[in-house]
Image (cartoon, rainbow, N blue to C red):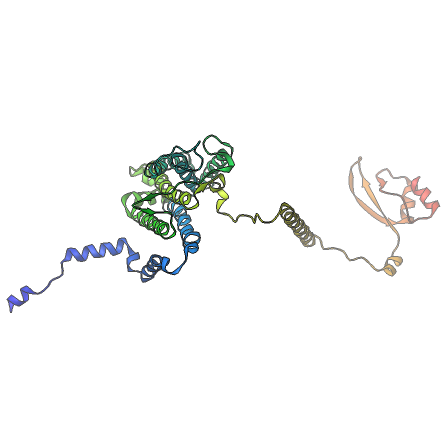
Length: 381
């Protein structure tokens, strides 16, 4: 009996500990919804056509990669950067400049496996330098510095023709072709984009739970305490900018491969906004702006009227019969030492008597339009 008991299967405690650690590190593996979404994304080429694969899903994944870099900075580092799309555009420009394109006088003609790593390295360096300028600020100042970097790069690419070809941009960028496969084909490019997006997601998850990510979250919560413990807050922030810039650069490389061209409109801060309908003429856009301006003016006038009603309600005019029964009054400005100190309203006969006495501290504001000519002359006297 003891022999049988000794031969029974006993679970290894080290294996259980490893499995529990894996579950704690990657809770997504225990979520059935995540597995269902992953399965749908994998079999998507069997469901959708080429237009939906590239224009909808691949573009969404590319923009999601760029947004993931911003999420890493803002969520784990507490730094909101508005130059992530600029970094992606910079990587796309470097791919077009170092690689092959339709602008032979600008592109150097390197193969894609040399141009792409060079573009990623330069874009990471660009993001790290921008982060080094922004790490000494917090809050709105960080946002403004990164916004200024993005705007400056946009205007530089728009006006530089020697390297970036001005507002025209660089067209017909060559895409990778190896192992006999055109990786810009619909299905192949979709799987490339899906794989890069998955790698970036799991990389962010791993870094956030690594010692560097935990230290970065500590710097986000209390940088002074982390500095007192021996950490360098600025160094961690600059490293976070470099890591986020590398992720954004991957999205920029995929974007230039997707559209096969890059222009200043792809690197501006407002590139993610809704583009206007170019099929409409300038006259229609001018009419739209005029209508919007008129609507704004009407709204402002209504707001001023409501505020005036709240401060001083409007007086309703009296009927003509009631106004005829009222005594005729005249408004005077009371002055003392040539300074107005108030107003005075009195019937006409009282004012005539007052002017006959010629009191120096009362002066008329206007004539007597409703009085007789004799009284009018007496008032003028």
